[in-house]
Length: 423
Image 1: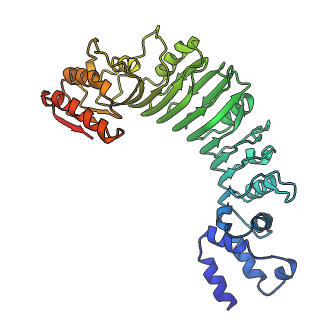
Image 2: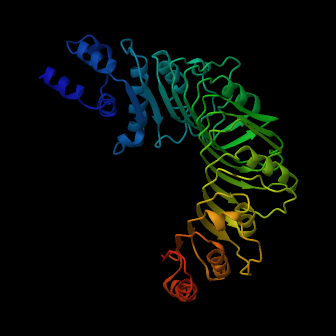
Image 3: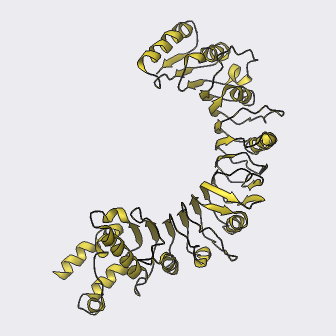
């Protein structure tokens, strides 16, 4: 009977075995029993440890926490545990890791995983007041590190960092100190995917990202007033995807980004003095083929945007004045998607951008409003090779949608362009 139970459990996925084993009281009497070897083999065979307290729902809160803590302690400190591929810590049911009653040894768990040659670490450490153990930052086996740390103060990188095999680094909801941040980035020599999501930067003169192997970069920074007085430096010759959500900062030095295919830029201006910095940002991504751009304000431009010769797909969310500017800077554009804010409703008396005359084949207007009729008229009159125009009115109520269709139909019927769709 014992062998039958063991075989059934051994065939379960790791997260199911972890869930079952977390209920077993492995005391010394059990360790020395006839089943000790079988249970040791089950513990040692687990390669992925996924601690998600959602799996323990249905128990009382005290039982959840006690079962969770005891199982993590004995699994990561079990003498026969040979190796570990993945250590994932997600505990929605834990209000705080600083619980004085239970004494969570999170740093000890991380060190236990590192000592077992872990390849992937995924940590959700909300409300955690301690720094991460130094051993984590010299883990040569680590390939992927994901860290979510809302309301925590943990991101202090030690002086010695060597993550020589790390390929994916994702940090969310953290406060990043300039020196620690640059020390971490500069010691990830084979990094391919780098993400800082909803993070804040303090005490920084620059953010320096110079990684030849980098293919994907996502920077989402929120700043208090005065915290944007620094320079973003990026040198990534193999970068394919770049996403940047931030207030415009003091300066940008983006070089050697000739491999860039897709960029998503969402910017706003904390100061009109940084208008030139915005121009430098776009100069750095001038080789991009697909661009999604969101601009929240209108800043008078004293300098022209760079010409984006390779841009063939453009999605724009913002005010119409910026759209006009960008259409003149994308001579080879083929596909345009727009979602406009605060449309003036006046006639566009501007020279037609060359992309409308020679290359633009598809236009999509999202969340159409009746004050956009002059924009539609202008695009129809000047798009010489247009094949498809999609106008979406589905964000309106039925009455307004009907009014919009009645407004558009005469204009569209008089056009000799190709397929036109109103949704």
